[in-house]
Amino acid sequence: MRVKASVIHECNLVIQEYIRNARGVELFACRWIPSSSSPKALVFLCHGYGMECSDSMKECGIRLASAGYAVFGLDYEGHGKSMGSRCYIKKFGNVVNDCYAYYTSICGKTVVPACKSFKTPRVSKISKCRYPRRVEEIIPKWKIVPTKDVINAAFKDLVKREEVRNNKLIYQDKPRLKTALEMLRTSMNLEDTLHEITMPFFVLHGEADTVTDPEISKALYEKASTRDKTLKLYPGMWHALTSGEPDSNVDLVFADIITWLDLRTADPASLTVTPIRVTTATTSIERVTVNGVSNSQRRPKRPYFNLLCGLNRGRLVPRSAM
Image (spheres, rainbow, N blue to C red):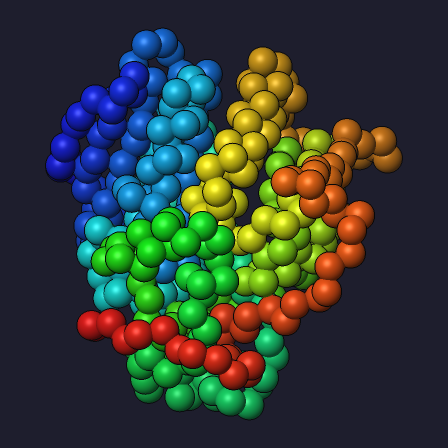
């Protein structure tokens, strides 16, 4: 491990470093530590596909550290400042194993990360007929999977949208063939195993999100076996709840996150993960009114972007270097 930088940001200590994974690849890691007191708990960030931690999730780290939490982030192999072919995922299990190994090395026990997940629509055509498995093995790194300009659809605030577009650490090219298929297979596997989830969780989703369908979050909430689960839907909000909305909306989202964490860290027993043996449960689903928009007000259904196949016509994102 080599430390890249250590600085003080407001009341928080920010540390950036490189670690080496089991395959010998250097991965960039960062952490935000409250300097005024011992952390209430540890929060482990998992960024989304094509994203990174040091810049795009910086506000998340700063806000949670300011609320008393030690926050840790890791750029996946090929993402952000980490080494490896840009946004090439040979095996999705590698991403999971890297995160698990690093985060358990910090706390020494099972971790429950705060995820910005790789949500992808379930599209069977890509796996059944369009890209046979033998082609996947021949040209795994080819950038040939059409996709929409997700940045336009994910970030509502125009200034923040342009900041994201100008962030060279964020991958903005077509997905590589192997990467797209790994994401698709993982998504389908997760869909079939949602009932196995027993950890407490809080899912937040913008109801106006056209990148990932809110029905995905609803399915997780309904099928998961955990006793303590909460789903909060934000009418009028888009995909990037913590980084792409107007500041007033971002403040609301973070207030909800911190409140959820504070309630559970005040009672550590509430975070114990145990098999479900009873029929009673502590669950809740919340809907809020944002800028006068209530989720009871029906809006026209908008078509969802297909992140893998590009079946709907539209402008493709610019190509980037290998």
